[in-house]
Length: 215
Image (cartoon, rainbow, N blue to C red; front, side, top):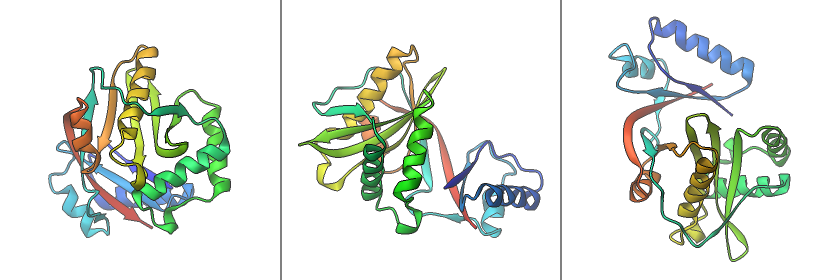
């Protein structure tokens, strides 16, 4: 679904935008996120990219890079790793509900089952769900690296918010990070999740401006 463009230091903006769009066409990814930071060049790179058709997305423009290196609080909510393709489909549907994802951006069940099978072959990526009253209340993912765990996809269904599910998912991934000997969590946090993560002990170490390109 997505191409990610990072560590942006451009010399020929037209050439580089064309190169990314060519990659998107080959890969079949209709959208690209361009992650700009204070180190991106040239100095007016954002204005140049906007002039070439990229756009800011309201509510998903300023993103904080945050780290946690101390034990977060526990929450009295059941958390488990997704164990079946059907459960993975349900978890992603919960995420779509939480993010109010447009229908055009949602993948069908067959594509999600294929993704689950690919994830299951690797020990690098895992999907977690938190349950309340026997229902999936929240879901989140993790990518395990030699330096720590990257968190992404954390989302809570509207009916379950304020009941500790998000906190429980953070704690579960922290426990797995500790078990692997890499007690650090990293996350790219938007305006909804950053305040919660700060309360859990995360600190901001950098910031990004995200632009989106749509073929």
